[in-house]
Length: 210
Image 1: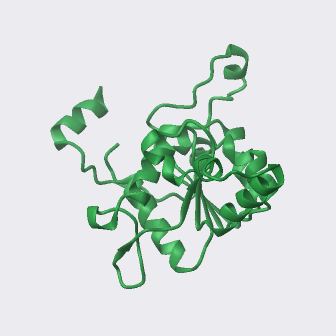
Image 2 (image 1 turned 90 degrees about the vertical axis):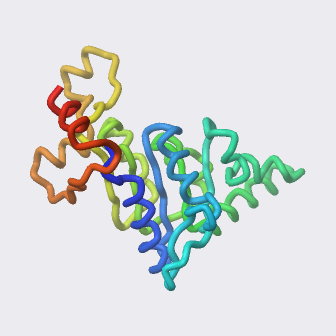
């Protein structure tokens, strides 16, 4: 922890948007998705947003899908946009598809990446970015691939908490091994963030050894 994984994700998003990429940003938990959302929607004057071609911060067109979001992010959610309009079923569906199509960045949990709202919209993404990838079971990590993405980036720390699995049977079948961990075990090429910024090196060393 503290090596700048989320900051790296924001920098990657900034770079990909310069190439007009449409992005799907996911994580296993709502908390992780919300943290990325906050950094994207925070006013540029407060250090939020993404970098444009001139290196200046600007606000991206981002949309949060699914329930479980923190209330401070409500203005950027699909649910809020639909609730503000008095539309019939067809009208709501049309608006929903339009909002998803116009957004440069869609943020949601891994499970919501397979929701009817996203699947029925027909949206296709150039890149899928998955944060906390080491905490998601492998099958959940595969859900965003339904978007027919061209590339997928996994971000995580295999030394932190593994996926939560309660069944002893599936534990025996190694269902608690994430795709991130499996790729690491196969010596798939990874980019290591080796500098820790969150705490004094002595504290970091103690927690690592313990």
